[in-house]
Image 1 (tube, rainbow, N blue to C red):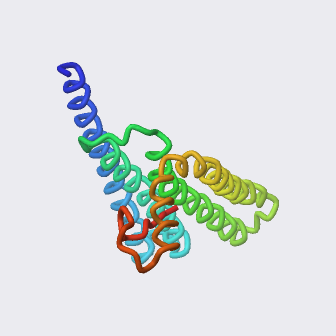
Image 2 (cartoon, rainbow, N blue to C red; image 1 turned 180 degrees about the vertical axis):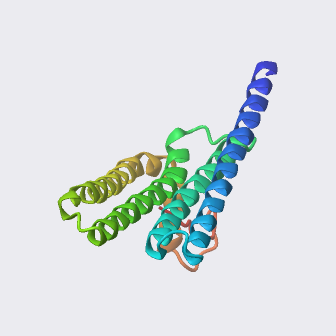
Image 3 (cartoon, rainbow, N blue to C red; image 1 turned 45 degrees about the vertical axis):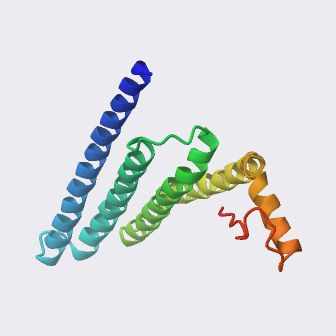
Length: 184
């Protein structure tokens, strides 16, 4: 008990520390985004190049901010779900979707940039980035599909209550009269 208390405090301290690092990095990237936009408006950089740089930095800032939120939420609290699949199914889709959006936007920005600079021979780089984002998204779908079976085994009592409530709508003898809501 005494050792687990120290581990819990250490875990919270590290979660707060890493969250602060990610939030500070996100704020710094947000400042760089604003700086790039100002440089484009006042003519220090070409307008299109400045806005492409700003969009790129904003997406990276968003991904970093999301990572800070996930670390703070999952590791900063005192409660422990205990089952790693439940924790991964809750946090992984949000983070992977942000990374996929960042990759796709980066690929699209590279297509725009290369088309403006007449570098059509380098288009295989953005195609590879967009393809990797598609592969990452498909991998997330496979993970969610395969891990859904193990989560379904844990929540079988909730599904049994829902089936019982649907089969007997007017009876109040069900263990829990509210139907279970299954969120994927």
